[in-house]
Image (cartoon, rainbow, N blue to C red; front, side, top):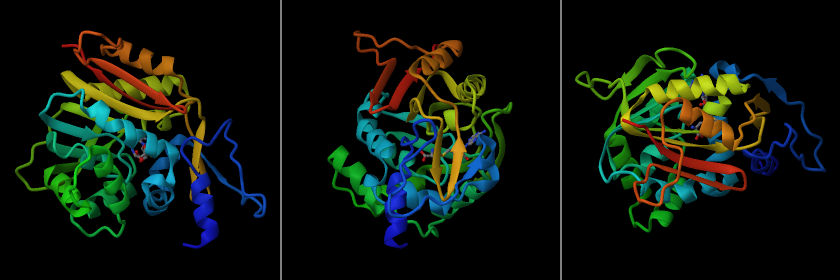
Length: 293
Ligand SMILES: C[S@@+](CC[C@H](N)C(=O)[O-])C[C@H]1O[C@@H](n2cnc3c(N)ncnc32)[C@H](O)[C@@H]1O
């Protein structure tokens, strides 16, 4: 990848999209971007380009840095042992299974786009060419652990049970099981922890669609289980690979509304019950909410 493209990738951050405009370098005229709808994720999302644009190093993307930085503090609020976790709309990424590797017993991952599920399968089968070392190092520095990237990935990989075909706007959300670790794996209908980052607000373009996506995600959380959600507030699109994907302009009150509608705790309490926490930094948010029993 040439230098020009790298600088361009640095500009292609999840959040740098005020009113859908970004800031091209002055010495290179902006190439025409393809304008894509949220549903174009299904066919137009290029997993390799996405990973190169946002995950080549942990410093590639501010939103990613903020999510990774606050993740350990969010995970700390969970019970020490979580039986099952689903990463909903993982794209081609595995940083959440890696970050949760010591706390979760079984991991499921998923996406809407077939190309992303294929990419996840390649990682599970250890034949993916993308190098997660820099992201792992970033995670281990924040955790203050000394595990190598290889060990971190292998621990996470060993726990992945299946890759699911999902659509947060459909009922049921899980449409199919694309890949299983072995034939004995039974995919649960609900999980103790559902993580979903840069997904629900990107899966549609209106508040109504966002709330439908939240409803779908919440159906996957066991009563008494947790939803961990992250993303960017007040942005209506994001871009990479010469494409700009439109999204819903999410506000904090939309997040709260979605949780309330689906019977999740939305108040930070002083009692130490750890039922709800919302962290926002530079418009990037990460939150954990417990589902009422
Ligand atoms: C910006 S990417 C985020 C990927 C990853 N979670 C991350 O943190 O980088 C948005 C993801 O949402 C997925 N997505 C879009 N529409 C969806 C839908 N209706 N149901 C589930 N996932 C969807 C896309 O396929 C894509 O992988």
